[in-house]
Amino acid sequence: MGLFLLKRLLTLIVTLAGASVVVFLVLEVLPGDAAQMLMGPDASPDTVQALASKLGLDRPPLERYLHWMSGMVKGDLGLSYTYGSSVRELILERMTVTLPLAVMAMLLTTMLALCVGLYAASRHNRWSDVGLMGLSQVGIAVPNFWFAILLILLFSVHLQWFSAGGFPGWEEDTVQALKSLLLPAISLAVVQASILARITRSAVLDVLREDFVRTARAKGLSPRATLWGHVLRNAMIPVVTVMGLQFANLLAGTIVVENVFYLPGLGRLVFQSIANRDVIVVRNCVMFMASMVIVVNFFIDVLYAVIDPRIKASDI
Image (cartoon, rainbow, N blue to C red; front, side):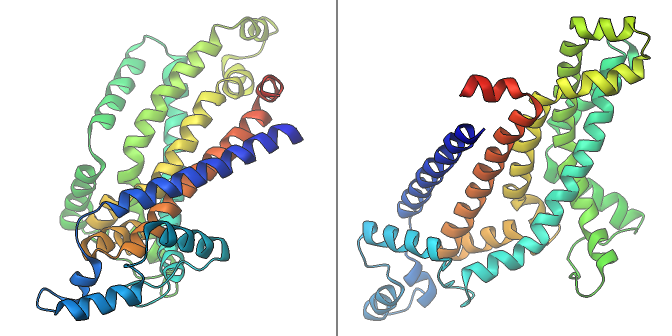
């Protein structure tokens, strides 16, 4: 197990380093001048140059990259051009919205997908199976931002059960804060649950054809006990793979939905920083999102070995 974890940790470090290089190079080629944008179009060249020098924008790219990396190792992500505050504080503040939103969406996704996938697999080729898979195909095809708008029209405009947007803050009212995240979480979960339900169904159907399932049934176990006690665990490896990728996607891909609901999360921070060309915030936020995806995948790899020890043995 130690060698398995060591190899995964080395892969994690190399992947993070590669992601940092890609993020830095991509932002280096973006058009525009942050100093010029901050000073305005009427600013004199000398003033713009002085601000660029103060912000370190006139230094060589390699020097800026090494300075950025050393700051990340120390936990110093620099100051935002636009907000005038620490980027680390901005990210931590916005994550108090994005992380609960992603967790709520993932919980809804998991509960809905497992129930639908298991139910459809247990009724393979029946009308209920065909109908549920048809609905899941519609869920995959519907963009989450469009579904979010439909939820606002129904539950906020027509029924007036929920607010159309905004976030009251955890310190004001926890119940209202959770309520303000419910519609965004549902809009994110619909597409993810549709994908996960189809994968769960396929994985369960593959396991149902195995010999040990027939043996369990021959011993007198009920179909429900066989499905939940034997089939589900053996079908979880592909399901866990997709769940890990989906959770990472929910953490890093809430930009559109957060803007639809005016949520002050990490996605909206990235959107606003891109509009203001706040390169320091964009660079660190994108790297933070990429790091979350990579770290989640690392834990998924470790979870594989827990679910199925054969993976650990074959890897070593």
